[in-house]
Length: 264
Image (cartoon, rainbow, N blue to C red; front, side, top):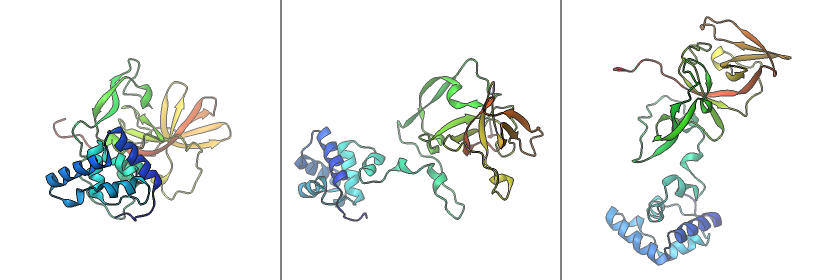
């Protein structure tokens, strides 16, 4: 349970949510008793006095059952009600990727709530080809709502997405053709050392005049070297920088298929 410390901001936001719902504290109290009865849990009960103290910032609510009840009454999603007290499901950058747990374990399937959707591309732009590497945002001319899946683990607030073309084996097997890569556009400076193995070497997404490439990079004055993996069978490319190349950012996450699905 969270510490019962003063929290004026949480109180203001909860009061605003109650007023938007056009409810008095007495009405919230009555509705909470109905929820408690339905759930067979007295902890869901909210008293007029308790709610008044919370809204006045006397303390921060830490009872998960009461927060659940308020969320239901005010029609707030779990991440919204948690954000009122300084927490939030969306505040964790990268989802599961950010946990840094010491042991390998099975996370399980990505569960979707009924009706939960995400804005995603549906129609490929006429001039785009899946064989070529490109920035995800430029490949599609039609966007729409689709069910939330693996994309919800990507930090879309601070990143852009890149698509690795089906004919692009520059970073194979580290980044396979057809992969999606998350690019942190804040990390554009080329790192020149400090890794013990090539698997730790930073990978960058680079936009050229007529194409894009995902590769290791070295910078020597105005010459940018695009370095493929040793297993790709490709040669190092040299381009003028910044005249003919722009470093979009560093690849920070990869979504790729390791094997074909059965029945695909």
